[in-house]
Image 1: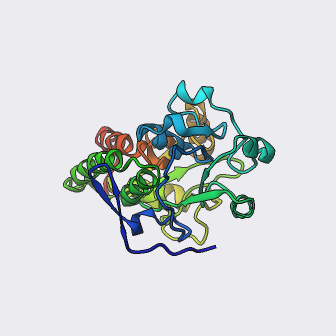
Image 2: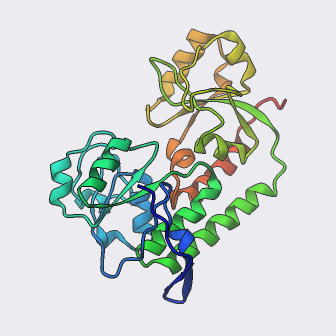
Image 3: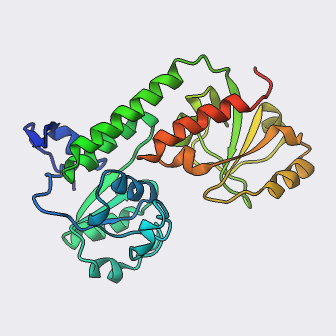
Length: 288
């Protein structure tokens, strides 16, 4: 399944593209298209990125979780969720390319699509810095290299701004689910985003990237701040009140956080960096 590209240089309009930039997370090289593509995106943040790169007219399908940019995506046919899709509906769209993500889409789906002769682009950003090669991969394959470089420059400027700040270190518990309670390990894109503003996620060590949590006293007391994400579970203000009451935590220690801003890579990551910087400045918690 792993294909190796050459070391030649592809040229876009005024932009040179190294072939390594056109190799996806599965190690597969994707030659730049020679005609307008028909893209099905099964990754919400990538769908938004495609539009940001000026490729909206080449997107022919999405998942029902692909909600940005609204209302443009509303006109696109949905092929189901990120885990379970309506396969026949996807094939009926006659895509030239299907974009997947290692964490969001099952491997079996990728294998089935490849077996049916479709070009599958696999993505897997694990850190904020991975956004730049992601822009270049998608922009390079679909002949939007100049637009990709514009996004990359904007992202790198904002990232540099965050890194110039001496953020106080704080321990945070980031919750993504209840019944059971689930959080994130430090080996996740979200945790590495939070680390940019000095927030070290708990637990400090975990074999699972998205562990089930025991809300014991030790864990709760270790956290300076407990963050309740808006996705995949949509926590609401009343959830914080219930949690504070049930677990004996001060309400001031609990905070809702926009999960799109912390977990969506792609073009939204630029806005996510701004959001985190503002949030970190607003929140006042004890510093360890």
